[in-house]
Image 1 (cartoon, helix red, strand yellow):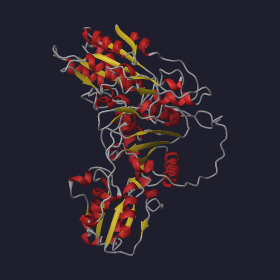
Image 2 (cartoon, rainbow, N blue to C red; image 1 turned 45 degrees about the vertical axis):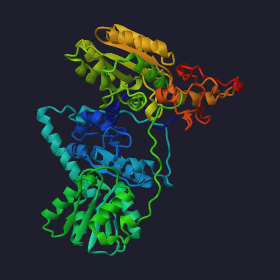
Image 3 (cartoon, rainbow, N blue to C red; image 1 turned 135 degrees about the vertical axis):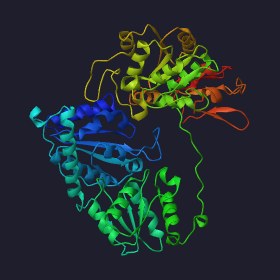
Amino acid sequence: KRPFYFEFSTNEKVAVEIAYGAALNGYFSTVFFKSVGLNVAADMVVQLSLMNIIGGLVVVLGDDPGANSSQNEQDNRHYAMMAYTPVLEPASPSEVYSFYKEAARIAKKHQMPVILRMTTHVCHAKERVSFDSWDGKPFTALPKFSAANGPYIPLTSEVFPMKRRAMARLDAVEAETDGSGLNPVVDHQNRERGIITFGLPFLSVMDVIREATVKPDILKIGSVYPVPKNEIRRFLESHSQIRVVEELDDILEKEVKAIAYDSGLSVKIIGKTEREEWVGEYTPDKVRTVLRNTWPDLFPISPEQIPLIMEAPKRPPQLCPGCGHRSAFFAIKKALKENDITVADIGCHTLGYLPPYRVGELLMCMGASPGIGSGLSLFNTTRKVIVFLGDSTFFHAGLPGIINAIFNRHNITLILMENGTTAMTGHQDHPGVGKNFNQPTDKIPVRQLLEGIGVKHIFEVDTYQQSRLTELVKQAAATDGFSVVIARHPCMLKFNREQRKKSNYRLRQVEIDQDKCRRIHDCVAAFGCPTFTRHEDGSVTVNPDLCIGDGSCIQTCPAQAISMRTDQG
């Protein structure tokens, strides 16, 4: 009944391949992923502009200044420039809507890819958005793929014509977006000072100049690549000093300086001057500092005079109450020797690196742990190498490294943390679940897949069986060659939400017998469930707002002081 098709693909590269294939059939397509996901998809994305994409294709990209939930804060405008792909960057939810429609228009008109680049704070913003009317008719268009629309094979003889066409399209997009209304000027009648900015930094600039003694004019760039050269040139010509305010790398700054140089303009252009200006998000406090360092007279109050607001205490990320990964780390750590090497991967289980578990000393990107672990195992006869991988990441990017470990006989143990979902990013289904976004589907069992590619040593256990898990990890680590321990337990956040919807749901929780408690504190210091609170006098109590009554903690207490509450049945 839905007048469009949607899927969660197994990884970002496959998602781009699906969208590209559909667009070659004449269907307007959109693919979306976060910043480091572009690294996975880059093999496809850098080629897209060379092709004649008759349906049009928009890449919605979530960049992450500040590395709020990423391994880095890479500036993916570099990718766009390398791939000859236009970039629009909205600053607010309403602009996300209007800019997406503009990106779709450009992509369909020029039969090319367009990137809609959004950053973390823009995605977290809230605003009332007025949507246009939409007639959602059933999707009945026939596929239109034809090799005559190509060529679609970038052989050497075809690459140069393709590249020339990609650059010509960029020129056409620049001509359309330059003066289109995507790049407005906030005119404060200040011909001495101007600011050129875009995206989140623009909103921060607007916040902080409210208190400025003199308000600079502002040119807000919406088409961040290719930049609107004529609009920038006119802004430069009408001002004596320009401050470029941009997050992450100095890409816009260099563009602005090049335009000024090529135009023979004498305007003073001020860009990044300190290393900290390359780091982190441009929230209002940071933008205020940047502007004050540029023009000290802009703000009547110095930073030292601003009354301090008490900062909230730091709250490190932690595994949810009842999480099977917590039981796994508690049990696995008992099986490890002090000099064993543990390699982490991306997922909820990455938090095993934090206290009290301290499991996982290395981390790079999704699916890298088998490969990294294999490298660490070379010429290594004294230290066991244990690598961790989630079941979602197993399908996403883990299989090549596992196959390589089998193929090259690497001596590592893989702990496959199977919780039956993609928990870290919103409980999307994966191929091992038995359903996808649209319908039930054939389940791809993890064990059968491992057996099918030649893994001979496979152990399985529920992570709540902690003693058993400890023993199996010891056995696996003692096995010569590649071995796997499937440490299985459903994501309890998802499981509990589903249980609460049932009519016969009853809340069950644990309690601590204070007479039995010897204040050994394994429940807090070693198991680390956030349900437990250790007080100044050494006593431990259960937070009833957090406890889900899963009982995984009961076996962790040496004094056997933890039990299910009897008053709840």
